[in-house]
Image 1 (cartoon, one colour):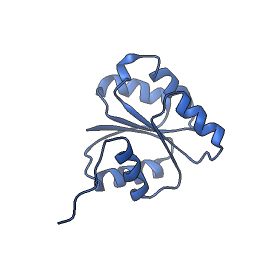
Image 2 (cartoon, one colour):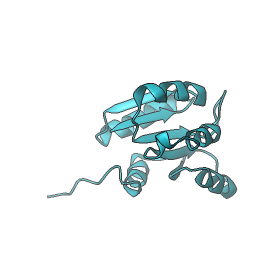
Image 3 (spheres, rainbow, N blue to C red):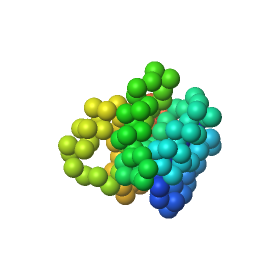
Image 4 (cartoon, one colour):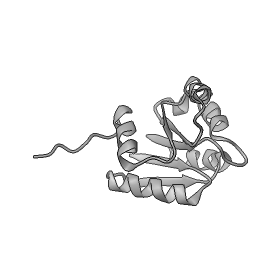
Length: 128
C-alpha cells in the first residue's frame, strides 16, 4: 500500500511516519506542500491514501484536494485531511470537496488506526 503524507511540519511528518510504520505500512512518501505533492503524485501513482494537512504554504490541502478531485485518475485514492482546524464548517467544507475522512491534530496512533479502519485500509490484528 502506498501512502503520501503532505505536511509542511517535519515533526508531524516524522510522527505520522512512525505511526504508519508501527501499523505495518512500508511505502510512505512525503511532500511539504501541495505543489510538491502534485509533482510527486504523478511519479508514484497509484496511491492508496493521502494524509493531507490543511494549512501549508504555496498550496493548501483544500486546494490540492479540489485539484485531485477534478481528475478521475485519483478516484480510488482515499484522502484524509489532517489538521488542527476545529471549525465544523471547515470539516464540512473538506468533506464536500471530496475528503474521505478527517482527523484533528494532535492525534494518537490509535486514533489514526481507527480512521484507517473506517476507510477500509487497515484492520486491527486479531488476538489469539
